[in-house]
Length: 393
Image (cartoon, rainbow, N blue to C red; front, side, top):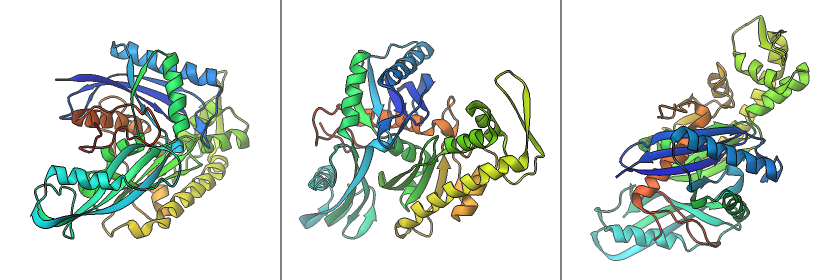
């Protein structure tokens, strides 16, 4: 039976509300969406007033209702990268004698992984296995194998409780019940990176508007997660300041720029609708140093944990901050010295890289719902939802 669900994602430049329908056996059908620009967040704080954030939420939800023809009374909330951190725990379960591993044994070893001390305050919203071994044989599906000792590396996505409390209050004002909290970063990684490549540890870089996220994913888990304080919006801001133009003009100019190709002139419209042209060299002098700086930051973030990678690790890049610029993917690949692929979200609508995390969030909702209902957090330290078969009751 198909069920409807709504999810809301808070990016650094836009709020996206999605309404979908699915049964967990395949990709969810996107019924409608609402995309509303806003000032985002930085350093764990909103960049706009409370009233402006509330209005943006309300507008995004109402647009999603209108486009889908469905009323939203319950919603899953995506927790942004600025408000999460990761914890990991490696545990061993000795079955005392060799026998076939049962699903209950897998549950037991995952529950053992919960016995760890949080390094920072927070609420666990996901626990996911990076890998299992059964008598030193690496696998992602231990149930059914024969062995005596199960080892597991589990990763936990931990949310800032102040964000959860803030969302609870804001959604109550809209008379909307929060069905659960999920990580768009985890959903995006699971959506875009094939399982066989995650087994070898893969890297996904999401260049957003104000920040860039660097994700290491293994198995069904995020094992490293870093948020860099730079994104595509900084390119536009630099252009606006150096060339004395509006941010809208700077965004248009940024999108028209092509790396490595000698356009003599780049033209955009000013607020009065008049065409304004700029010499390519003047635009290049602003854009390319900033992209080089961003690429260096991504390079350092990857190399810091390069020991986790294998010779067959793959690298992906998404988000609307860079790869929508022609030659952007190739440029960052050259500086970082890794070949990045640019996957397209498997959605008929919103299939731009700018919406990959929102689509990943919706898919994560349906993967979760297909296993067991995700409960909203009611107090610190309890588990909300976590991926695949590892759900609390």
